[in-house]
Image 1: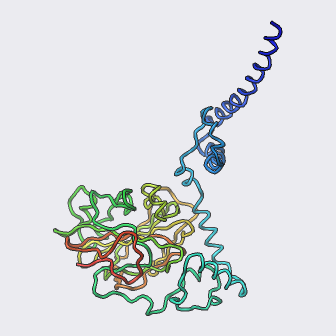
Image 2 (image 1 turned 180 degrees about the vertical axis):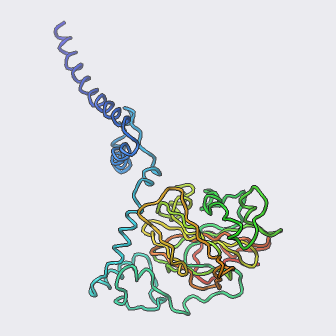
Image 3 (image 1 turned 120 degrees about the vertical axis):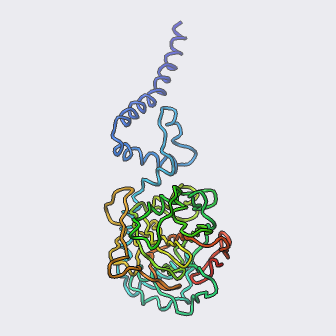
Length: 373
């Protein structure tokens, strides 16, 4: 009897020892559940990071006591990308010592495959800081503009997706869509538009202004090594600008497959107007470390501000009493620039026989044909 109790004693004590961490964790998790949502995010975020980073499922036993990590998408969205992008922007403005410029820029050139032979100034010592290097201009003959086709690529980059817009949904990558209305925002007032809106409940139909036309889209991803300026893709008139403050998540194709409606979450500048076939828009989408989007003719635009209201946007009309038409743009004319790689989205109206001269995934350079009639 005494021997059996003696044997049972260590078993009971070991059982209590094994259950003690679980009880303690349950109490701790109970305290976390009583916290406010911001405090809960702050306290559980490091644990969630460790859950995904540590090998061999080291923290999986926590799931047995009721703890569930936030999803990878939610975890990534909680990263302060706007703050990091502003810090990166300030770092880019720091003037580099003359002796340091060549090794720093050479490392960047080697990493991202930059072709400096196309640059207007090939001497690396000419660029005082990283910002100047990112926004370097090209030699005039480096990007001949195709005159035979009605729409050209506004920038260097990679074709992510293109085609007709159907059911007011646009593909950001194959199989992943976003809402056209959420991306462009609601229609502006009739007074600001060069054409009357169609009487239809479909947002897509509101943008198609002429009978027999279709709505098309094209998404171009600019990698960090690409030429960072963008140009007018056709002859058109810009009548309106809408700025959406938002997140600055990465827009590389892998991330676009991962996060639905990524382009609707990110900060972006939407330019709308018309061309010879009806509605035309160009949207510059910001990304991590690309908080600065500059439109050359729009001095009132300020992006990546420290504070903003989620879901808000700012409108500005280029149609005034003095200028009833807006801002005319010629095909190939300089339009704006990014501070690093990002994305350009074209959404435009054209006749049904408009034909894209593209393949998904192909590399393209500014001035090359996107499509024509």
